[in-house]
Image (cartoon, rainbow, N blue to C red; front, side, top):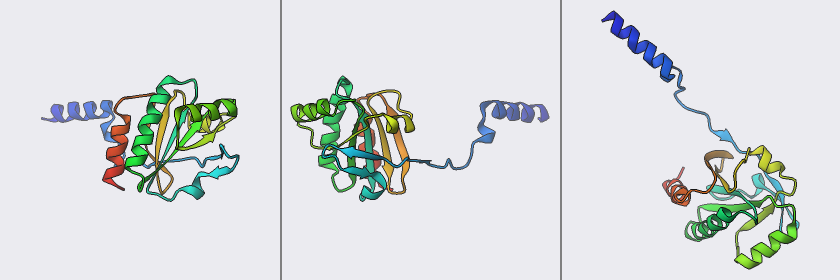
Length: 162
């Protein structure tokens, strides 16, 4: 019996289960201060009014971004009362972004991360990348790269509430 307890202890120790915290602290979101397409500075902390905010990093040259943006537009229409969505474009050319927005009829708020500093602060390595942030400025969900079930997952989280 003593050997069995010792083996179980060693297995738990090796698997890391003994050192799991009871609750994992939420990752704090960085404040975003970027210009929108009207050259007005947007301060994320000051504009968060709804229960959730989605930051979606993308670029005009990113084909999966285009697909995800269409899905985000539909999500925003469906859950307008609960979520604000900000598209953060990392292109160097504001003119290209403006043309892209016009050609693709994008109605979401777009911010321009000209020097990609916000992208770096959020450790974005793949486009598109999404961060779901609550009113407390905590990142409660993030996903890097395009995945067909991302919007469905976001919708479930937002509908379930805080």
